[in-house]
Image (cartoon, rainbow, N blue to C red; front, side, top):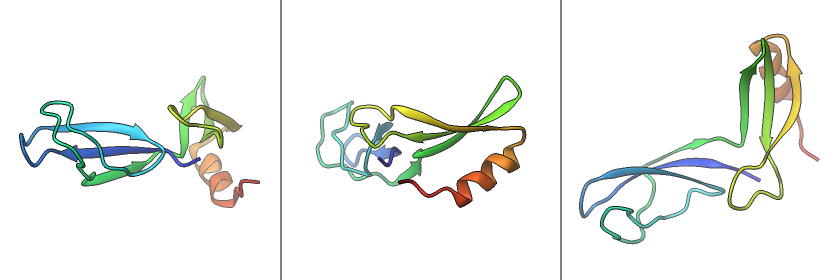
Length: 93
């Protein structure tokens, strides 16, 4: 399932916040409770490459993810470029 880091700015109190979710959905301002705020930007976190013990680990949000991304490891690679190449050719089932 897709996973996003959404960036919000409240039109009422002007405060900013972020929230991770499985879509780029509207949110309620945690500062003043103003509703239906649409993200002004979103970062796709569905697939990640993280460095761990000198290897580059490819992670993908689980298809069963609901309240958190529940990342599954797809592979470990010796270089970031090798991990990127894998992701470019990867096709989920």
